[in-house]
Image: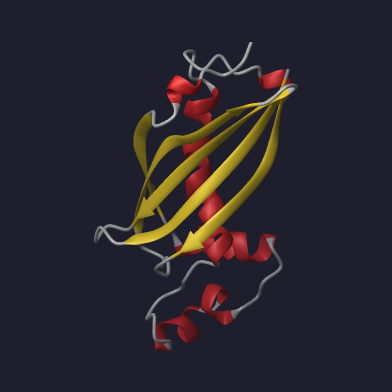
Amino acid sequence: MAIDTKFIGKEYPSYTYDVSKDKIKEYAKAIKNQDPHFMDEAFAKKSKYGAIIAPPTFAVVFGAYLIEPIFLDSELNLNMAMLVHGEQEFEFFEVVKAGDAITTTAKISDIRNKEKLDVITIEGISKNQHGRSVCRGLYTFVVRK
């Protein structure tokens, strides 16, 4: 059964993620990026940012919290056994710092029904505690029929 295109534009409740320097450091170590902006508090404090900053791809950490509610949305009735991650892309606006509270909202931005699969795209907009956008993420999933 195809995913109904009537769900394009459906919005989901926002989620706020508190960014900590420890999580940033853990993430930087995991991606093997020892940039002192991410790892060294003394260096980061003297930088133009004044604090530890997150690598841009840290957006997957706070953005991921919005995917689960979509997967569990009974209205969509996604066949999780047939769902695979297609792609993701990010557009970055402002640096994320330790101590930021990042609030992300998500909506279904596109559903394409093809012969043997459905493609669903989720758009996440993330803003910091000052209301400034830090990134926009697009997450694309493919559901085989």
